[in-house]
Length: 610
Image 1 (cartoon, rainbow, N blue to C red):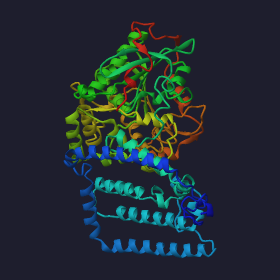
Image 2 (cartoon, rainbow, N blue to C red):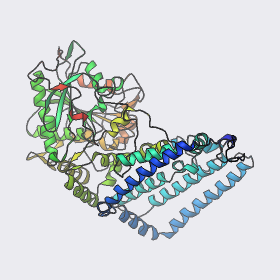
Image 3 (tube, rainbow, N blue to C red):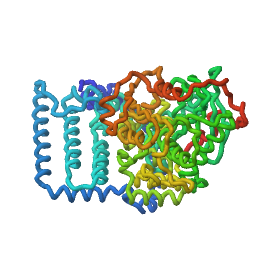
Image 4 (cartoon, rainbow, N blue to C red):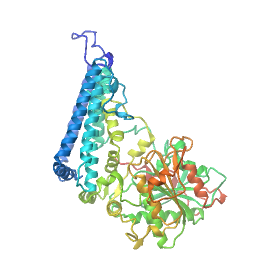
């Protein structure tokens, strides 16, 4: 690290002297005094609130059932001390090599890294490699992290679910212990502390207290400037009208921009874990606006943010008051009985279930179905499966029974843990150590705009889909008294998955293309669960893979796939209109039997959690 990056003073000073320590700015006493008084008052209030809630928190000291998993791992590990000793010897050999290399570097001798972390954004600052001390800290951490993860992965005899849980929480621990997360071992933080005289730490502490206050004692990290966006003003602004609503949803019909439109309307069913406007963030990346420009008459379901009054709403209620009610409303609004339908994530799981129910009822109103990152076979559900075991489900159901719903923030925390370095620790460093305000980012604003889950629906979904994996079984799930069977669905289907998806792993979503009985197409996009979907053609940021064949093995599909540059959106549009591209005069909201209730994006989407 360069001399002017050091935090230690090299020039002595006397009280009242105008000479300040070299490279260190003296903090303003008035600012420090004012900040500390504010911090003390807020801290006292937060601690008092936390103490009041202790009886509730202590009722279940291990709600995630982590302790038993690690106890079982330790027991198994001790049965093979030779393997443990071998791992330790390997670790210490690497560590001794690191010590020797660091000593050589301090003498001016160039040495190779014992372990490297290419692309790891935690260590992007040049000092992590250029300064011998921080380079040693970085490599020492990476060696320790590799040792911990290697040990837990090599334990014999653990059942797969326990092994997955141990591996997941070991990585959570390893990520939390990164030297980038601590003041004294992060060169970027030390540099800023010297430059600002520690004002960054005061600002960071204030940011921390603000997040604790917002979370009522629990840490709710602010990931973006929440005042920079407002739904209906600078995001979710595609023009349209709410033309129908019930207890669970509002149905939005968007204004056309072409003189003629495709005869079949397009119905989009988003997940109800977050708000629908992920598909209508800003004009430049709005799937809704783009689809309207291609001549689709677009209808979008905007789910309500449920409270305790809707605690008894079940999965089948979301079907009847969601997709089925929307189909009836679209026919009234346009006179068209047939539609193209899209389901996103959980909305796609509901769409598949609805199609199976409709097949049993001989209802063929949905002519094509598109599934964005949708799971139908939950056998390999990815790391979300870590949170689904009997103990955790019972704990969750007990909690939901008291309120009638699952808090959206709790679900958001679960998803953030899947990418802890990106969605937790990077913000800890930026907000609390560097004392920066988070950058305005529309996608992160949407990510923070979480919604509640009705107790009965969520329990049904977790138990029947994630835990028992009954959706893929013929007759495994019954909706409105009708046993459903995905194999009976003959509707042509388009499956869009993303290669780096942590929530719906693409190899699991691929299985859905073999569960439905129609003519299906599978497309794999680059990036993850959100960015891979919200990838407009004008941006061309991520490519995609296509393959006309559908072998059973997803790896075989990928080996035979052709990589295409740019967005998958045009491919989807070409596929959709291949099943019918008849045009009709453009339809405006209110032209049919349904009269507008209010302007898009409607009122349901604007209800935020406190």
